[in-house]
Length: 164
Image (tube, rainbow, N blue to C red):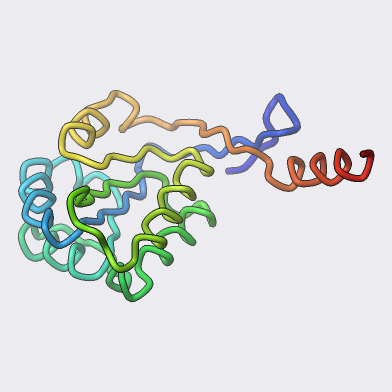
């Protein structure tokens, strides 16, 4: 549900109590996200799950949870997840990334994280943050995200530029 916020420069998107959660992990930390998913299987089963190729397959195989699969990250999966965030179809992301290994698709990863911030979704990049977010009392409730109205912001920038 999208509503204009109090400020014309923002929109409100209401997340349902059942969250749409994206699960992503770089190769060197796939075992970590699998162990985390196994430990949190009960809570994760209350939500709709999706993920990039191999990560989604491994979590589904090891937990029995239904996980919608997108392409592998380097083959466009990060961009597919980013598009679903922008379309309002994903409202939560667990992304265990490897900070010690350069990724060939680092620009895609940066773009995905930028989209997550722009659309005000919770993001966990490690186990501790994922644990805190998943155990939050907000997980089982509706929540209103505040999204910057990019069209309004762009129009104001154009007006400011034209008035110089």
